[in-house]
Length: 180
Image (cartoon, rainbow, N blue to C red; front, side, top):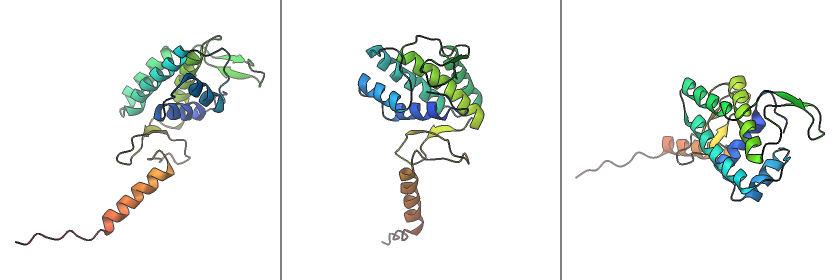
């Protein structure tokens, strides 16, 4: 996967893996490949465990509303994930930057990609651009990649459901007063 300047690809992949945890190693591999991640080494079950652990750690970053605390958690993730940047053409797809050492397992690659991608996303677009859906009862994670930066819901479906709920609440007939 080539990191874009905003980290959108990495955070969108991580949001997907967080909201719908992979049920198997094959599921993880397919979803990473579908997202454009080049898998250099044969994956193993440890990669699935690493991805699930990463999702938990990433959720701590998502759920922290205080910017300084969020940055501290993100810096902890970066310190254990990323290496100095290097230019590579490992997959024959053109020169690009990697923020990881060569020869990492899928879990290690995913960890570095998500750490750097999240840092690029938040510093480039704004520290509030990761959150949970505002619809009561949903709670899915979203990465706000909108131009306006005003996303509040994980999907248009949740936004519509919440709008319908608010509309019905405004136009509901007043409840009868108990007269005894």
